[in-house]
Image 1 (cartoon, helix red, strand yellow):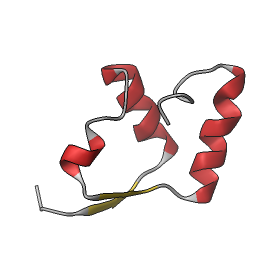
Image 2 (cartoon, rainbow, N blue to C red; image 1 turned 60 degrees about the vertical axis):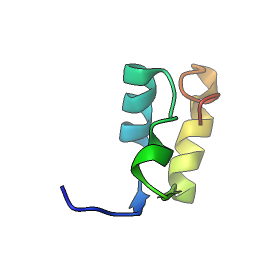
Image 3 (cartoon, helix red, strand yellow; image 1 turned 120 degrees about the vertical axis):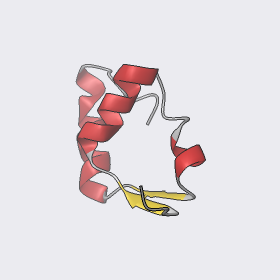
Image 4 (cartoon, helix red, strand yellow; image 1 turned 90 degrees about the horizontal axis):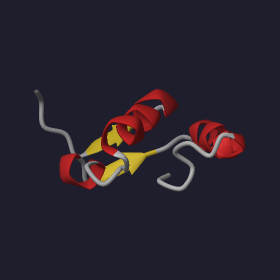
Length: 57
């Protein structure tokens, strides 16, 4: 796997990490910078209706 210090992440991986690990604390160990596009943040925030992954995000 190539080394990278930065990642642009989508909604699905964020939700999958929360589902599998319960939080997003692994990301800083893997990447120096995690970029979340505005649209992705809006998708997560809209999830407030279900409450899943909003607090972790």
